[in-house]
Amino acid sequence: QVQLVESGGGVVQPGRSLRLSCVASGFTFDYYSMHWVRQTPGKGLEWVAVLSYDGKNQNYADSVQGRFTISRDSSKKTLFLEMDSLRVEDTATYYCGRDATFDIWGQGTMVTVSS
Amino acid sequence: DFQMTQSPSTLAASVGDRVTITCRASESISNWVAWHQQKPGKAPNLLIYKTSTLQSGVPSRFSGGGSGTEFTLTISRLQPEDFATYYCQQYDSYPYTFGQGTKLEIK
Image 1 (cartoon, each protein chain N blue to C red):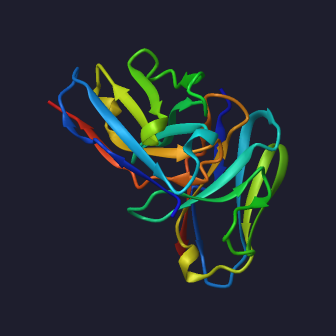
Image 2: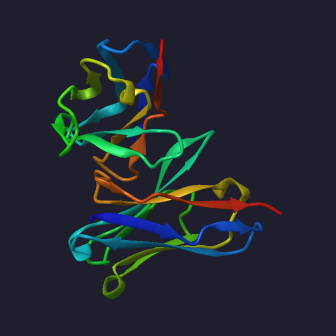
């Protein structure tokens, strides 16, 4: 079964860090670029970051550039999002997605940044 | 950055109706436009990619079209399960951007 399963969300104070994981199954992980997208009720869907299939190229939204780092572990078929210096405005549900078209979405993991 | 502006924000329709949602890009883009459906409490789900290509398993009553700066999603005969929120997305260049969503409600 082709699927993505996120984990790692939670409640964290502003300025702290959190690492999200996204485990892939049912397809050849190394063939695909992988993305993170977040969703808030007020701002809708916001693309966050991408990592190329080989892990060599990455790109970030301006809102997270310099604070978030996307990475992948092919041996574990896992995508990560390391989030540092978290802000209240980073509060959202975070989804991982496969390929530029997001043909597969994870179920999402909720991140709340609050003091 | 390419901005994607969807209209309408809310659309009320009845089962069996034909509806069209429009997405306008801030600049002319190629065919790299996708449409996603999202139901409450669930992740989005890809319906159409490359402007008009139906994702595997998606009913044929969904269709996409357009070019340049204007793109459309049409549902030919609304079914009860189609009442949801729809988002367009451009993947022409980074940062990828989504429209603000169109909520399709039962009239």
